Image 1 (spheres, helix red, strand yellow):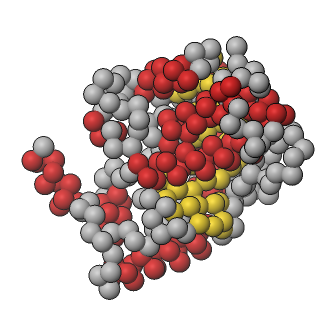
Image 2 (image 1 turned 90 degrees about the vertical axis):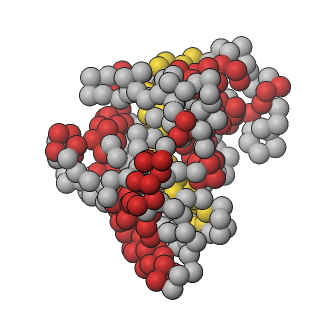
Length: 312
């Protein structure tokens, strides 16, 4: 049984104290989706000292995951991502208590999924707005923070939704994503993601053909650098949430509608309180660079994708 005196945590001290380590070890984390950011940040939390997890993911690892997820190897292709995650955590802490939901998060199991969680990470992907909404509503009902981490290019961004948000209509997942108040999950299933709502930081170096491909239905591209940044800032925000009860001069976590971002490519980072305005500014900059032909090509146009699919 690991304790605050275990050698596994000896190098944590110097950056946080024993009371904070104890708070981390007593936290219970639910992660909806471990196919990228969720896998990496979950492993970081396990190494920090979290020993209780509830993990939901209905998908299996495939070769296309290998570029960014340590759990995706030739030995795990075809295996459920949540099960692989549990195995990796048990290599760090064999005593870790990890419940698996192989069917993912559903309306039927969401209350059970969050039944023992003190914080939840929504890594269900932006293409599943109804799942994100169900998680947000259940987290508010339970009174726990809901953390959203997203990678984009060499960058990532993070925010949290306060369990008491919504009294003024702001600060909720639904408001952040532009979902009408009171919309049913069936209605939300039919909605398309609004990037101007959820991506306040838009890498100015992006190839505009990539954006057009995604808007046409292509999968969101994702690389290891962005996932690493996402897992780092996500685990750091989780640290602030988990240690809220310890008086140690720590800042508050980032709460929506504010959002923080960090880019490993151009060393840009910051925090914005006006996500939509920020998105427009970065979009205009990226468009201008594209028109001036100063941005690198990314081989992700609709034509590029069709060509690779044909030749695969």
